[in-house]
Image (tube, rainbow, N blue to C red; front, side):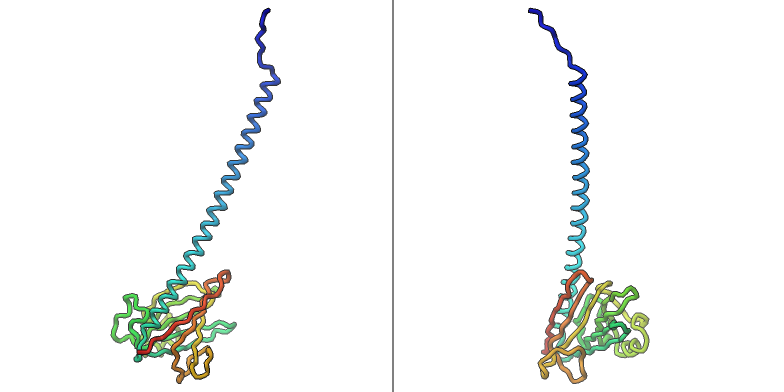
Amino acid sequence: MRHVRQHPTVQSRAFTLLEMMLSIAVFLLLVGSAFSLVGATTELMAEISDTQNEAAIRLRFVESCRVAFESTTGESNLEFDFNDRGNNRSDTYLSLLNSPGAFDFGLNTRDEITRVVLATEARSDGFFRTGIYYMTDSDYEEAKQSDFDESGALYLELIPRLRQLSWRFYDDRRKEWVPSLERDLDTSLVEMTLQTDSASPPLRSVFYCLKE
């Protein structure tokens, strides 16, 4: 019996081409999905990194405040002033007097500096900045009559952008928190509420001022 070799038909070659086109389409779909996944993952990682950096900044700031308040002694004192800018916005100035160890980042080395001022000041964009002024008493009185940032005092910025930083002080006699330091109020507890932006919840911290 004679065997006849069968050659591929046009129909079978067309079917193979269709399979190839379908494979390419599936491959392109998978590649597109992979790039979308990589892009979403990169964006998520960036958001996580920003959140972690923001949390680290808050924790470092809170720790710096804790060390500063615990560096006070029986010779130290606290003063609190504010400048009302309207629209529920105020510059606040919390001074630690005769406490050379407070916020000492290698800058508080001049003997004539008597007060370290933790300042929170309104910015033009609606946020606040917070930093440290190293001042003499005369520098401080002059700055209150004008602007602190024009006083020429040594300034170290700690957080450039804040939504909120507010203070309260515990009155031992009335057993309650008060929003300002009266002249005869000798407090040992200071409360700070810190919010970096509207998306993050406010962070409340209480500091103890040592009295040796």
